Image (cartoon, rainbow, N blue to C red; front, side):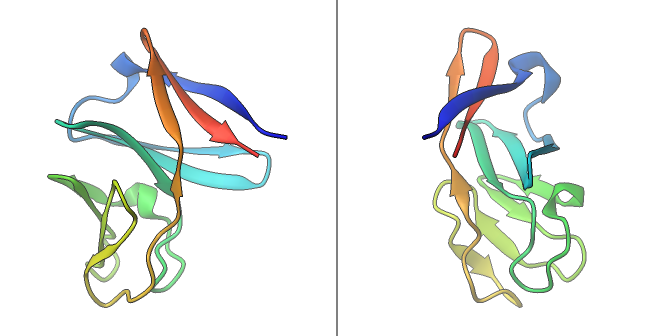
Length: 103
């Protein structure tokens, strides 16, 4: 059974920023775009590099190692060399708290 876990406040991650987290054995990154907050697995599907060291570009996250890009909403690959989507996590904002669904 899962639950929402508070990971940060909205002030912790400015628009265009991202922050990596590890809870239990799950690594993920929260990104803040002009459209809101999104959470994805902290691992590029191209070569397993941590994507938390990447950059937010619009509604995408880009891995700095080889330039693979992923849609933050769906996890879909938007630029190679990755071909496999990245996992997304359910996220919600409650007042100033950012919460991520953890199984």
